[in-house]
Image (cartoon, rainbow, N blue to C red; front, side, top):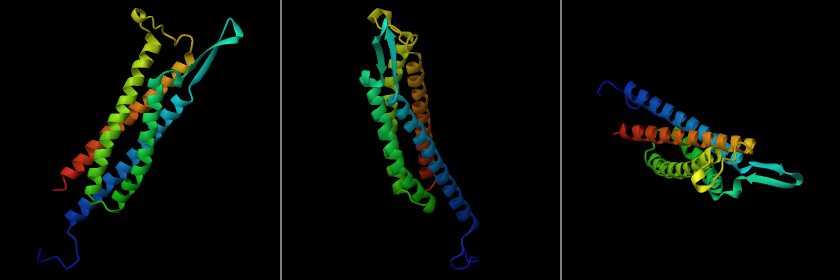
Length: 185
């Protein structure tokens, strides 16, 4: 390194910093995508409501998301993950500015894994109920309700798509952060 002047950087470290900054920008974009997916899922499920007349207009059957505790858990889980993603955007911006930060990336991996578990639990539980709503279970006298409550079933199925999309993004975030940390040593 005798040929380098004081304060000069070699091209390898500049390139490495650029790659880390690019990964940090991708991390920020993926967090925004996950935020949109989980927030849209929570809103779609939380506003799902359909009523059908039974014999007369005064007697109605109603389907709401909060009729089933599983759907309520789904909305709460997606809302918590969305709030976490909003807060984690600040650390993601910090990683763009200071791409060499390692301890904050470890913290993000830890909390991302916890949020992945919460999101997976909520989406999986809701998926089981959505399956029963579509297919029913004749052994337990649970009849398929999706032929009658068509828009209700479309909305709850659509909200699952966003939530499972958020799960995929979290897996990518965890893998990307782990690889970035492992290459720094």
